[in-house]
Length: 443
RNA sequence: GGGGGUGUAGCUCAGUUGGCAGAGCAAUGGCUUUUUAAGCCAUGGGCCGACAGUUCGAAUCUGUCCACCCUUACCA
Image 1: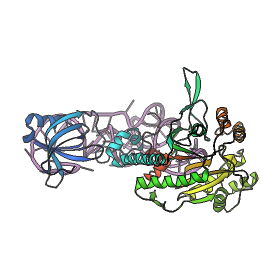
Image 2: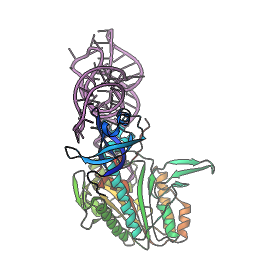
Image 3: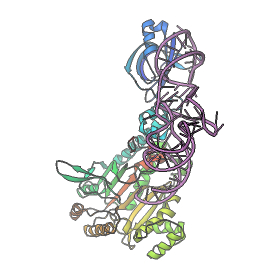
Image 4: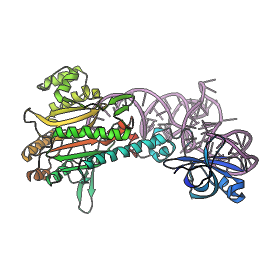
């Protein structure tokens, strides 16, 4: 509703500044959407109320007022207050009004103060929320069913990562916090929910830096009777939809680098991508050839690492940072993808793709492996890597294999890292800028 | 983990060659009836990140540790 001069209003908010001139005073109040100036006069309020306001109200307090709208000499819309009540008292001072909080550590530990003093901080979390709601709208409107699967799991799986572990007292049982939602969502595909998704936290017991927080948010989407090509189309549509909803266009800028999402995303075969940025074809390379190349590029690596880890290393070092505009990398080596279905026309390769944007892995998807015999062999291979010292290799999940043995339809699966997408869409350098309360060492 | 930087009042920051611990904002007490980073006068506020050392004397020099940031390595 548009209000004009002389209209009566009742409003409430937090006091952000206060200027007392003796027998009159100005304050500014704000709430989550707006700010406005209030004017208090001795002759309007009377001595008792005016003095009480002047003495007792501080910056940070919440106030409720009634009054009439007017414009000051400088044209600022202001409420001439005729009555007020205190809604809540602040007994600690707010940060400095002009600079706000500057120390990075303080900004994170007192996020509520930072977002109060700095609208840009709050705006990022509003955008993040918009992003997730656009994602949900898209998936719902494409008939996907949102589900919630366990976070506390007797066995973890679905990704290569080290887990957090905990203990349930009543059952006297060791439990893990999930590292991915994958294996439970596939059980739902087996159970006849043909299109499902879950948006939720995953937990990985690994290092913290500007790209990683121990708990992070991902969406996983599964669709029966689909393959990775269908998931690629879905991913592209979803990403474009979200970007358009959040930023208002398909043009995106991250850390001063522009990307245009209005064209179809490029698709590059895994080995072709490596060939393009290394100048060499490694698809049939021996371990020695890989080692020689890594040394020639001065890339650090573990001497005992298996061949597929060396390949992964080359990909990460030589290819990823070049993938600035959204690009699908397709058809990965089988050893890197123990849950993906083999390609029937290409040896040692699976039907998998990853989507990169600004050099970051945004999405990972494949045609799901639905053959229980093959799946058992893949798990056994992973257990072998684990025995040879890879703590992130996957663990054999008997109950998941039992589920597969009951028959799983062909299906496509997709995972998207929501935090990284939020980083791009809010132009945030660090993941901690878009996780409201990132994990910090205790003070 | 390696390399570089930072840490001083509630907040934002100065602090000279090693010589009494400072300013602005915020707070408290005054003056001030159209200000908007309001203004003026006054007051209170500190384990100078922690510990040890050098020195007559350390915020300042040295060492160790802690936290954060940047960079680099690993997982998304």
